[in-house]
Length: 132
Image 1 (cartoon, one colour):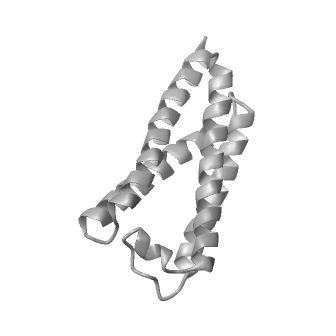
Image 2 (image 1 turned 60 degrees about the horizontal axis):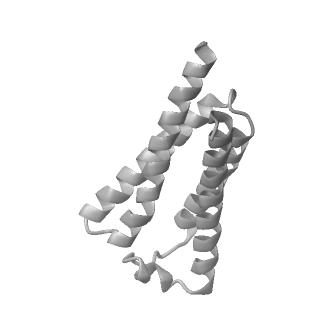
Image 3 (image 1 turned 90 degrees about the vertical axis):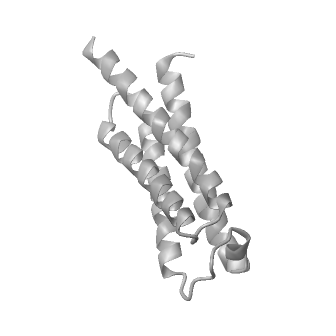
């Protein structure tokens, strides 16, 4: 697969991943807040912070979609994406070790860190292509 097709698919899949998670968790929290317990989380006294997080995850998905449209532009968004994926993974792992998140949460965000690593590799490859 050529680099441009790989880039497009990588960021499109990342966008779909973010959108799916954001919408699913937002909707599930409206159907039954008991779903928090299924992930080993306490039911929050307000959904303000949870809804804000899901909104930000959705917005990052929009950014990933923009990145998927043009391989030679939006490198700043790719760097933000690497930071977001790494930060979110590390935060969730920290909360796991503090006993505030379950192994299920860590398993889900492991996909995020994989995306982050793939984003770094893609950005390095794009910069090499650009330098030619």
